[in-house]
Image 1 (cartoon, rainbow, N blue to C red):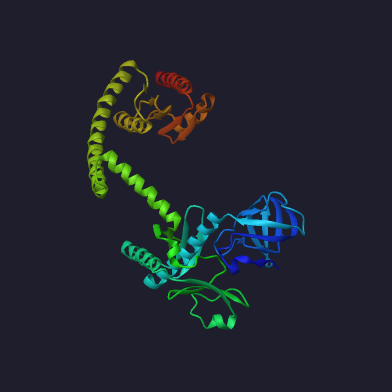
Image 2 (tube, rainbow, N blue to C red):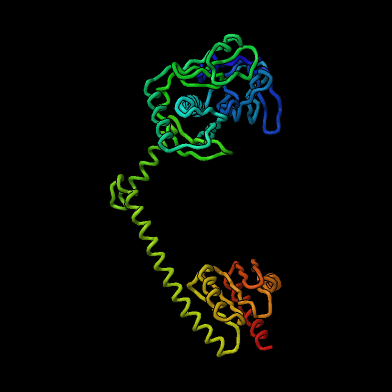
Length: 399
């Protein structure tokens, strides 16, 4: 069985060991050492990486009490001694996030009475799911503040093994899932937890913890957070964004929200005015197009260079409301989109006609009996399909 140096000290970074075994695998080779400080994936914490000799350790897994190190190539022969080195920056980050999770979970339990159901440590952020269906922002602000007050108290974090009988007498968060010796992670005065992960020595090493967001997940509360250097990097990034916005908008950071709310309200008013003007314009354009079609004796058809699909849909609706018999064919050169519509008395189905004709022009789309739309990759495909449809509709009108 592999001797686990990370249980002697989570701060061991370099050591030497004898290669016990090398086993070929699908993604490389698995190396078993006599002793290792590489922590294997488990309990929500990813496996460590680093180097065995000059060979990169890609991942670390546990199997039947042995620790297996995934490498691209054998670092030596079985029986040879090799120097080993952790990717310490990554490991210490994991220690910060895992210890931060313990402190956050304990604080959520103390303040909200909600137990933690699961923990996930990702490359960018960490999450916990807790038994809480409803919450307030004030409650979460209180949790975050209390966590950081506990960080500032620099409480010792101890890790040690006890017998199952001794574990039964400790106020554990939940009963351990292992038999025999149980590893305890204790945050002094805060929590006793059965855990096999690596942790910092004191809460002060966490620096700070920041809750990023709270959301419902399968009826529970999911908290996304960052601790330590991740939280510092997040603070620096957010500060840069705020400073940039403040400078560009010539507004103090404290007044940005108020300024944005005013702009949002102004945008709503302007959008309402714009929609009213568009409706009026559609009425004028619809009247003009209808007169042209009536005079020419064909369908209502026009290509627009400055209208979106949504605007064409609105115009088509206005036209079909005025005349239920004449087909309406509108094209947008800005989006390479086509609209075909009628008010129900044209004698054909728009969706069926598109299904028949679009493949020949590379168009994709569809619709119902009274309105269909299509998109094209190029302007040439759009105009070719438009011209063909216009001719076909003109022949239909002439019948």
